[in-house]
Amino acid sequence: MDDSSSTIIHSNNTHNSGKKEEFNFPKALKENQSFPEFDSNKKSKDIAKQLESLRKVAENLKEDDWCYPSLNKYLGLQYYHDAIIRQSDYRILQSRQWINDSLIEFWYEYLTHNLYKEYSNQLLCLSPSLTQLIKMTDSMDEIRMILQPLNIEQRKLILMPLNDNMSYDYGGSHWSLLVFINDGDKSRLEYYDSSIQPQLSMMKIIGQKFSKLLSCDSDVHIEQCHLQEDGYNCGIHLICNSNAICQKYLLNDQRSIKDIISLEQIKKFRLQLIDIIDRLKSESISLSPA
Image 1: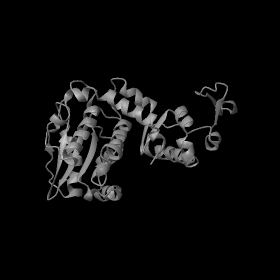
Image 2: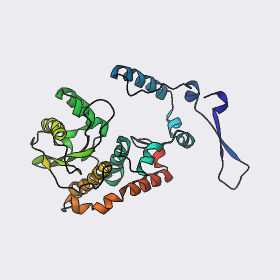
Image 3: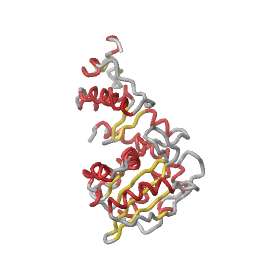
Image 4: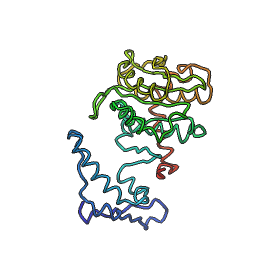
């Protein structure tokens, strides 16, 4: 970025067509014109160094810099609490691509802060990255340390999105859902998978860890849910099942998951999720990170 590109002129949409809005990039962005490139193929030690470089750049940005609408538009970002939606994520919903971590994390933030905000002390939605970290961590002491701030013992319902990736590298081709339910005197783990061939081995790995953490039965109950009719909508099934499970156990809906959410609703949910994101954007909620 040279000096000539450090200012963007936006046409004002008001009737005063002669006026223009000038937006100067934050000083931190000007001073850090060369952002470190992130190479996901490097070893974990090198990635840690790159993340530290990115963190230092981010520390120099004031809160107003991140929230400024013109900057968000330039960067193609949309914020909703702890979730970030990029233009590339938005395009996934408009296509037949697999749902990624960012979209699942957004939906979990929406469940927590919108649809079921009255139950925020009972509901815990783990992010895909945190679930993956727990899955790949062998030490139970380390896992307890990671989860300690989340007060998992006090939660009635915990949602854990599972990916079939069994390495630290980016990857995976299927999403499924592990759920912890605490119904007073009894607690249990339930598993929901839209595939005709459930990922049972992966589910057992993390299920055993959470059964130790939460002192519940190590036998995971495999529950019925709608099966996907394609090879790309497992993430949408996970998102819809997550909402149905919240409705069942937080709102005491006595119906089965398959009755709470129909297959037709699941098939249409990509478009519905686009509408939700667009509405939040128009209401400017996304420009106020938590």
